[in-house]
Length: 103
Image 1 (cartoon, rainbow, N blue to C red):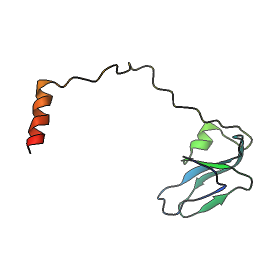
Image 2: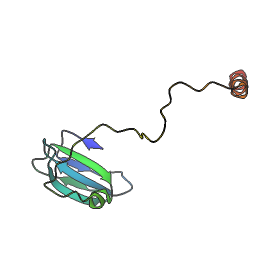
Image 3: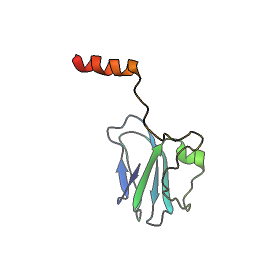
Image 4: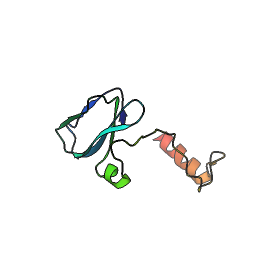
């Protein structure tokens, strides 16, 4: 989750730890906090936004302060054919719809 504009977060009420990256306006990582436990606060002077991730994600991806992160639109999975038209209801499906509507 990206939270902007802010330079601080809290994990009050959360049940699990999270990784946090504090970034400048240009996407440069200023500070990283790994596995911030529930009921804690974290902040970074000069940060414009905070990126919250599942615990372990930043270490796994190798993100370190000084890296520049960008946000890009999600790319669909091209290995699956796109749905070109809605599926037709079969006779059995239509009976189920009518039966539920009568209830």
